[in-house]
Image (cartoon, rainbow, N blue to C red; front, side, top):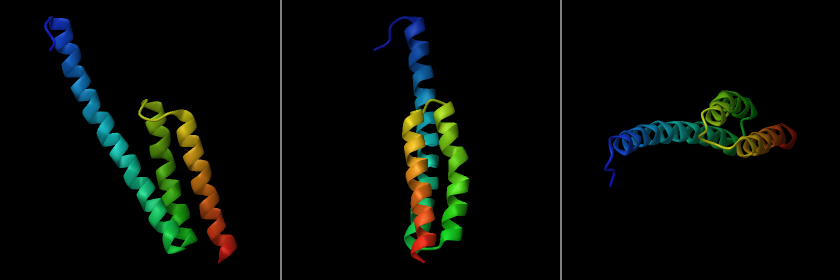
Length: 90
């Protein structure tokens, strides 16, 4: 348990930061789920639109330190290739 005023303040800051990061991560997951659902439906237009909406959120997660840069780059790359594959298959 925090004893000094500094450690008490850091604990408060940590809780606040945790809540913000959790909300941001949840928001990113929601955008990713929408892309996944659009890919599963087979609608390339909807999938590309969902991906276009998700990309800035994912990039913002990197900027804010919620996600690692390479993780987001990998996810964007894989999702975009899957969206493109819908057009080829159809």
